[in-house]
Image (cartoon, rainbow, N blue to C red; front, side, top):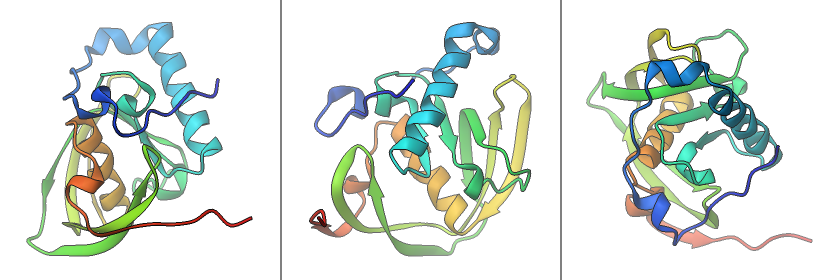
Amino acid sequence: MLLDILTEPNPILRQKTKLMAVADLNMAPIKTLIADMLETMYQKDGVGLAAPQIGESVRICVISKKFNPLGDKKDLILINPIWEKMSILKVWDEEGCLSVPKIYGKVKRYRKIRVKALDESGRPIKFLTEGFPARVIQHEVDHLDGILFIDKAKDLHQIQESL
């Protein structure tokens, strides 16, 4: 089911989310939530989506299979994700967000990170990633901490819709 995406300013977008219990991951409402998040992400042309963006204050984010660093051509579901920098190198690049429509800006993020999370079945996963997938994961985990890209961006600008 296509979900509504919350846009700034909405207080849910600014809240730190609650950790998910492994036992909850096998419950039908959570499985439905994840499926609906994936459908919404693709319908809205996103590359990632975090639960707060659809009004759920839980630590779940989804990443498009196109940018799954695990290389298994499946959508990447991250439950309770955390990351740590694996290099001191940070890179500036342009970002946008479904929750801040038509606004873009340059954000400096770590180029290479290590991610630890649970998958949708509650199994631990750990992997290294770099480049654009690392940027997407850092952006989505920021959402889980109540941070929007506009809080970190410079050169913010609005784009006009083309006809």
